Picture 1 (cartoon, rainbow, N blue to C red):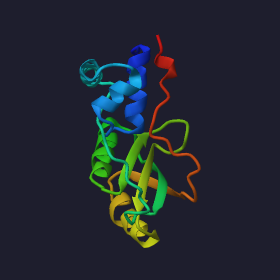
Picture 2 (cartoon, rainbow, N blue to C red):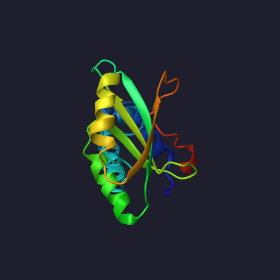
Picture 3 (cartoon, helix red, strand yellow):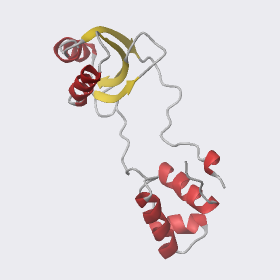
Amino acid sequence: MEKLDRIDRRILELLQQDARISIAELADAVGLSPTPCGRRVKQLESRGLIARQIVVLDPKKIGLPMTILVQISLEKQTKDRLKLFEEAVALIPEVMECYLITGSQSDYMLKMVTRDLDHYQQLLLDKLAAIEGVNSIISNFIMRQPVHKTAYDLEHLSR
C-alpha cells in the first residue's frame, strides 16, 4: 500500500468525484499550478493508482432498472472449473460484476442488470444455467439501493 501526501490524496479525491475536471481546475483546487498538477496526475496513473477513467450511467434511464445479485455454486471448485465459469460469465453483457466468494455456500456472487423479469428469466435459463459445472443459482432482486458509492475513502493513505 502506497502512502500519499496531502496533495496527491486530494487530487485522487477530486478525480473520483469528477474525472472530467480540467487540469487547471484541479490545480487550483489543490493549490498547484497546472504543469506540476498535470505531472502528478500522470505519476498517479503510471503508479497504477488511477486504473481508468469512466462515465457512470444511470441504469434506470438507459432501460436497465432491474438489478439482481446472483449467488452461484459450482459442482466442483477445481482450477479449471473456476476458469471456465469466469470466462463464460465475462461474455454475458448483463453481468456487471463477478466475485469469487467465501463464507457462504455459494462460490460466486454476480451483479447483473436487466430490463425486466422476463429478460432475467431468459438469461438464467439460456446462459447462467447452461454454464458447465453450475450446481445451483440463487437470485436476489434489489428493491432499493440506499447507498451507492464509486469513490473510495483515502484517509488511510495519509503520510
